[in-house]
Image (cartoon, rainbow, N blue to C red; front, side, top):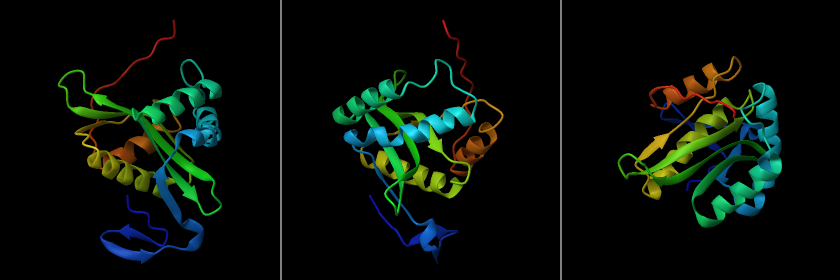
Length: 171
C-alpha cells in the first residue's frame, strides 16, 4: 500500500499539497473500530437517519470481528493529528451469482469537505482489493437529499456505473 503524505496526483502531474491537507490512507485495525463511530454517527445524523438506526456497540463488535477474521476491510483517512476524517468499509466474499471474489461496500463516512479524501479512499480501496484478488466491487449510495448526488458523482468519476436500485423495509 502506497502511503504518501506530501504529494497528490492531479491529472497525472505531481503537485505539492499544503501540509494542512495531507492525510494518510490506511487500513483500520480491529481494535481501532471505535475510533470511526463518531464519523458514523455524524453521517447518519447528516442524512436524517438510516433504516433500523445506528447502534454504536453493534457496529464496533461486528466490524471488529469481521476485520479480525479477514472478511471485512475498512480504510480510513488519517489526519496529522491522528484523527480520522473519513472511512469506507465493506465485506469480502464470493459473489453469490457467479463465485467471483467481490467486495460489497456497506458504509462510507465522509464529511462534506472531504471530497478529495473520498477520491483517495476509493483509489486506495481499489488498489487494496486488487492486491487480494477481488474481481468485482459493489458500491452503494443511500438515497437522500443531502448525500445522493455527492456520492453518486464521486463513484461515477471513478468509473462506476449505476446498476439498479435497492429498497428497504423495516419489519
